[in-house]
Length: 157
Image (tube, rainbow, N blue to C red; front, side, top):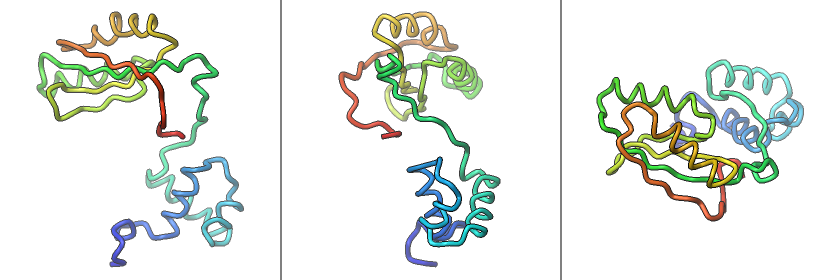
């Protein structure tokens, strides 16, 4: 036991250093990664492959500039379900996965059941997504919308 709970699992400080470095720059070369974490290239490659194979690294993707793409309208939608039994939750979850405008979906312990982060081009497009897609999901009883006026920080910033 190291005294630091971050290192008391199956990953050591080098594994965590690799994950931290790749979270900031997933495109860095193995040579640069090895230099950053203080290991030679071969052990870094072995550790990297293990982290991928064991599922600690789920993938790599491009971070898009949503403003330049004209998709900078963000709304948070509270969803209350009429049925919260396991099968109803499963049906709702499966439906959410088919709506590309929903960036995030979280089950919430509150007076509502889910919180959705929805990204569209503008309020008009959001209204269509809400009315035709979200409200049509299985077991949706009601929704409430909160429109973001300005984004200060997002997960990819």
